[in-house]
Image 1 (cartoon, one colour):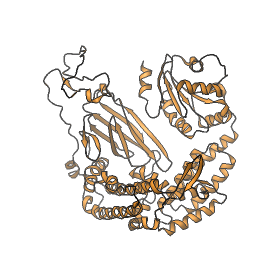
Image 2 (spheres, helix red, strand yellow):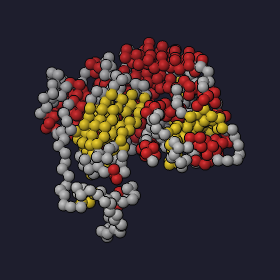
Image 3 (cartoon, one colour):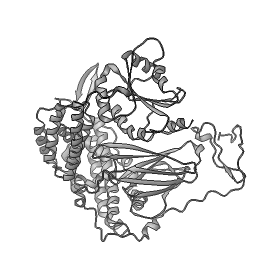
Image 4 (cartoon, rainbow, N blue to C red):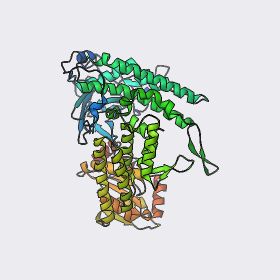
Length: 599
């Protein structure tokens, strides 16, 4: 409301059934939340009652088995990585108790990632008019992920084979550490291990050790003494980890939950602290570290400052097995695997895995003629700083190779020959059999891709069109006219664009589920950028849809008409040929698409 306490407006009343006692009144612009009023009553009505959700008391009084005495997390228990299940699936079911469709939020999402294979997915579900929602989520292993409902961003723990029953609301309050949070967010049903991990990680561990504010408390400012202060903060965070590891058996050892749940609670605490130190190290690298610079159009290298690995890592070696030889730590979420891949300790390992060496005095890595030598050199480096050939080194090595396979532009006999050597080196140095199994499965897929790419013909052209360049007429109309009556998604892409290809692969399952709808996907590419390569890749990946190739001039006309300069670029068009939205992505949010299909 304005400061005066008054606000002019027009009330429009719709005819409603006599048993309706509450009507939501929302202004035409719901984005202007400060001027919107919710929950106006037509008759005297008590405030909604907060639902009966599981409490800490329910968990503490649970009859769940405890799997015997628990004296702390033992990483050796997970050395076989048996918690990894590529075909796993978690389930979410819930209710938003004060929900109204007029609030403008009609979907929710959960971001998941398989860090072993670098496969990330945004899982999107619909919120029903009564506020209920439900979604199956493919999940390769237990992990902490992010649930987004409107302005609510909530970290949740998911387990394959488990159903999480959520109860929350749209109303929010301000939390000093987290910002805007729902007035309540909890779980209904049985107080099982997954619920216990979700509740205890947040309400017990995070509050006890201030895990949500670690980064802000230990952040180092960019000053002349940043290096010395970074070493100090590293030691202080390591001391915090010392106390947490000592404290955990007494804190959670007697809880009526399984040993695995207690291990996951430990992972949450350990991973949060390790994530904070990784972010502090990243801050230093970005502020002070070596980097390439372009001055007057000339590329130059600035040496910068480097942290001494032996000094920085030393405090963390007190718990080397819990941090660097702990496969279960990958369940903490995507932050740690991402930081490991790019931090100064393990980034050279990632590059050695891909057979790349520094290009002189730069931060650029280029292919080496002797990748085997790079492995040996890197192992000696890891030994010199006390890390050795630890699990994290082997994980980074494996992830980098798999990611390199996924991003290879054109699989060929030459790339296969080199990849065979790199994979052989990795298998020779990986001591975790499960990592090699994952790596070999991905490599077998890569071999298949090469064979298909090298030997398959261009394929059936029945689903592709080449539109000749003609100066007259509207190129966009010529493209969409044959599909009038369908909702259209125009996906502008190119064979040399890795994100384009990745997005097209992600969309496959969505498009398959919409095969019976009045909907067409039009993949549009510049014919002058390599039609043959495009067709081979489309055939190999079995990308369904209408494949359209336009001339370079028409591509320029389209980019001017739709105002885009980079790809991937998506456009959603309704059944009448009108543009609904540009810069649109199906796999991130299909709300507008669903709405257009209903019209």
